[in-house]
Amino acid sequence: MNIAIVRLSAIGDIVHTMIVLQFIKKHYPKAKIDWIVEESLAGVLQNNPNIDKIHKINLKSIKKSFLNLFVEIKKLKSIAKNNYDIVIDAQGLIKSAIVAKIIGGHIVGSQIVGFDKKSIRESLASYFYNKKIDISYRENKIYRNCFLVSKALGFEINKKDILDKKAFLFFDKHLFPFLKKNKKNIVFVVGSSWKSKNYPWQKYAYIIDRLDTNSIIVWGNEEELKIANDIQDIAKNVIIAPKLSFDELKALLSQVDLVIGNDTGPTHMAWGLNRASIMLFGPTPIEQAYQTDINIVLKSPSIVDHYKLDKNDFSIQEIDEELVVQKAKEILAI
Image (cartoon, rainbow, N blue to C red; front, top):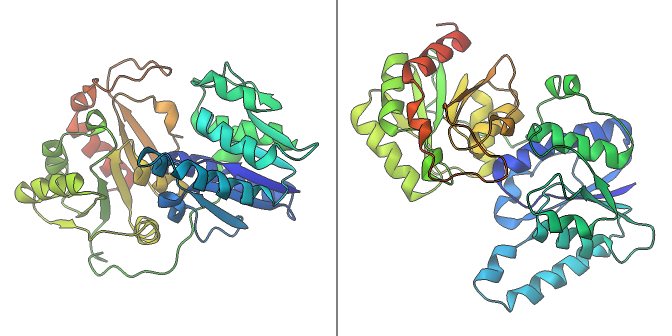
């Protein structure tokens, strides 16, 4: 079986979809699996032994110049020459549905699979599929991805399978001299794509001081670096990590005792690595995470509309920092 998975972005969503790879290989060990992704995020997928080929595209470049549209279409037509038996759009957006259609639509008998119009926010995307899967948009995102793939390929992935998953983020070996053997190591993920998803940096500083562990802050842009510096100015024993590649980030997260952070990619990576985490949610639904004994979600009191997220919901600020400290101590047994 020749399979293509379309999940272009974002980091956390790619992680939430990657779990399906181990189940596909369990049922179809000889299947060839390719993945189509935005080139800037390909590092999340790299080194995964269950992916045969990562195809990088750059749809974001079209915003800079309309002429880039033709460049990207040419790339997609080249990818289509792989003659996939089945193309699965795990993103459910119009742009990802068009990508799936271009890649798989030219082959008679090829299946293009995605969510039906009731199961996604951009309902027009479903018109590009010839096999449509129905599952509530309010269902847990990880389970939705597993349900989609299992129905597309004719096997079952249940919730116990997800809980019993193997770690599925892979990386080269990296050494980090700032990790300590005589203290618990915690990574803090203090930034995100929206300001309203960011837990107050003053509260992060409080948590760091209360825990008295080896606290490492990771960052991905200048705004996040500024937050890290603000925390370091008032909290003790804070290490700001250097700018990390995706490979280095995965390696670091795999070596620490706990990850605490906002609803954003690196925090979700901890779950994909089977590492302990505390995820802080405000304007986004907790169904974007999969809670386990070691992966805890703390949610603000606001009610979230899955179909229309409110970027002006800053209720994450109301999460009690002392509760975060308590949960961290329970996980770390300190």
